[in-house]
Amino acid sequence: MGGLKGRDLLSLADLSTDEMKDLLDLAAQLKAGKIRPRAEVDGHVPVLGLLFYKASTRTRVSFSTAMYHLGGQVLDLPLHATQVSRGEPIADTARVLDRYLDVLAIRTFDQQDLKVFAEYAQIPVINALTDLEHPCQILADLQTIQETFGGLSGLTLTYLGDGNNVAHSLLLGCALVGMNVRIAAPEGFQCDSAIVEQAREIANGNSDILLTSDPIEATTGTHVLYTDVWASMGQEDLAESRIPVFQPYQINDDLLSHADKDAIVLHCLPAHRGEEITNEVMEGSHSKVWDQAENRMHAQKALLASLLGAV
Ligand code: CP
Ligand code: NVA
Image 1: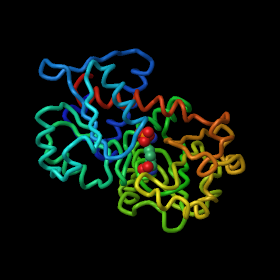
Image 2: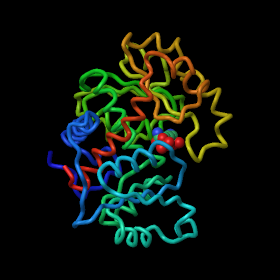
Image 3: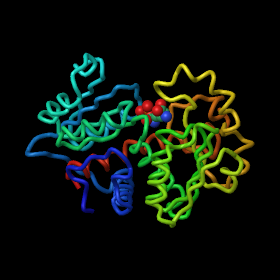
């Protein structure tokens, strides 16, 4: 593959279809143990910084483990431990971290802050979740779908819930690989129209994009049912008031009965059982959530290896 050496991944729209396919193939090879790349930058062991303004289990640990497997090192930089928390400008922090690190993954709120980091740091900057997108999650999701169905193009994915970061990256990722995508969200919680437009441009008529408030319409015959929490990080105060609004979008056995008989169920996790998904579905035979979580590590190892020029 050509590789993504030196690039940033702020949005899935930063990737071409071929680059996405190459990353997914690489992730599958890494998972199967067919290749074991070692990363090196200018003769030294590369260092990944994790600058996280929000909590994380999967992203933090899967990135760290992936980097260790590549022979690299990891520096965990929770916001409170840095001068960013005391108001040091992002542009200054970015220029300094650039001098020490080889790659930087950032989890923050505003996509614009991520863009400032990327503008001022020359090293690869990775979006480890913002309020707008969660591209690394969708790399693992597509890997999970591909390994289940043996391909991606022509399949249909249905996302039920809040039309924010995960839904946005699913729109872009599915469009890139030729999957149909349906988003079922309550009125007022649909996806950002600019992202929908971007996804339609990427799909270029090769796959369908449906936005609806009807969960059954969105689920009928689908191959992948996907959900996320109803109140994201930073929205904890809204959680109670959202429950009745989002209740019709819960993935339960009744809704699942409208999907294809071989449909799989995905959740980026953490899950709130009894809210966006029932315990029965989470633990049931259609659920692939643990493989999906495992694939975070393989997919991000592929991404890191590519950004660091190790493949
Ligand atoms: N899915 C996901 O990004 O999980 P964490 O918030 O635990 O990293
Ligand atoms: N939408 C969720 C995703 C968590 C991985 C959030 O932003 O909190």
